[in-house]
Figure (cartoon, rainbow, N blue to C red):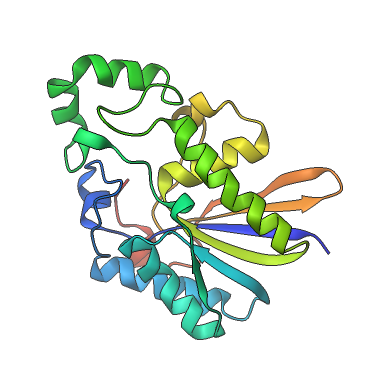
Length: 212
């Protein structure tokens, strides 16, 4: 039996609605975000899960809580799954950042793996800490289904690392809506992307909500 890693991005927050940079700032889920988390739990609670790992930030903990309650599994929180720290850009819009930090912003857009947001983390730093968590999971679980609840940038960088995509292109190659699910299956050929950006667990009124 293969090891299947299920990557779930957290549900909607005010920041995902407004498009402001939100890394280690710690907003709650909106009411719709909570409904997204519950919708995931309702669809996937009967899947035989081996473990559930999550970033310790409030929006990811709240997203993982319904599936933990439904399955009786303990949430394993790992700092390595936190979102990228956006430094001085936290809480600001793309337009504000482009105006106030234009040189850093242009460098970051060109090569986000090595150029950080002003005072923040590089993509390489995020990928490195997240990779330690993935290695731990692979060591602890040789097969079965493992859920990982994390964030947009972090999941995209993990997927790049697993699939052999240049980390500097994570923003150009991989989109990831809120509350979406991606699945990587490990078999004799290595990691295979079996599902990506799936939101079929959401009812239409939640799936149609705008947001980044």
